[in-house]
Amino acid sequence: MSERRLQMQLGIGACLASAFLVFVAIPNWVAAPSNIKNVFLSPVFWPYVLAGCTGVVGLGLIAAGFRMAEGPSEDATEAHDEGMGAWVRLLGMALIMAGTMVLLPRLGMVWTSMLCFALTAFLVKTRHPVAAVICAVVIPLALYAFFAHVAGVAIPQGNFVRLP
Image: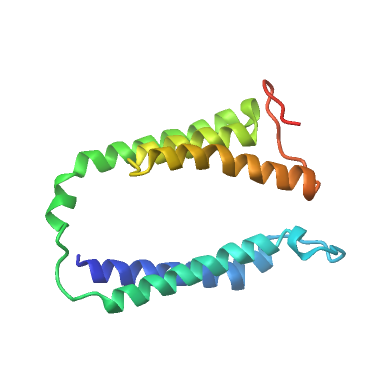
């Protein structure tokens, strides 16, 4: 499969997923009370933002696909040679997801998110390990600080360590 065709298929898939979320899934399956004063705290706001971002990324992939030259990709032979490594990464990702479900009630959402973010970054062999570790620590803490202290939303805490 050519790189251009892959980009186009991923872009179309992202746009279709975004349309499904915006027109079917969110209106039908996300409950939101009508008396919410702050739109940012509405349960439907962030799903719509994520669906919109998915659509924008899909359009970007389609645009990138149109700009690419037609023909097989240069890395086509390398991608087929790596067959076993792909299965190992898939198994690793499945283990990270299962570990997330096991660790959430024990460590809490913040600490589990930090661990899973870092493990996923190293599983996919990031080129920026220092930035990945910094983001793995800072992003969950910043989200916790916003939701717990600004928005007043209770974030699940673990049995061992509790954040203020």
